[in-house]
Image 1: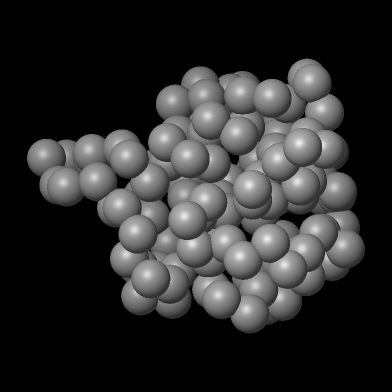
Image 2: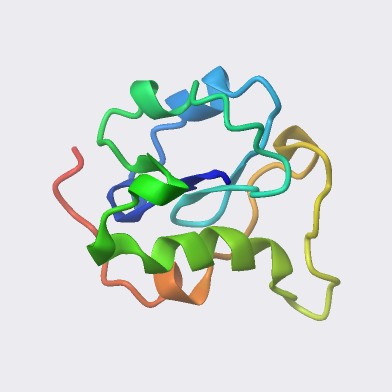
Length: 115
């Protein structure tokens, strides 16, 4: 089991969750943040600090955002510009911001109303 970041994070990326994560498993894509399912230790520290309630325990993810479980898993399996997939690098600080998103997020119209 793992935590999942859903639609409310897209185009917001508040990053308070990154500061709270004790295992550095929250990675930054171009438009959204993603939780690495193999690195997450299910501590729940990220969930209460999210200002837009975008983080859910996998079993509690609302049905309308069910695809975001897939997006959080597959984000780490995407090959970009001929490079190998990210896999499990062992910490987001090592990678910095990544210049791509999962196709579910990349296809979304710009999300407004976060200001």
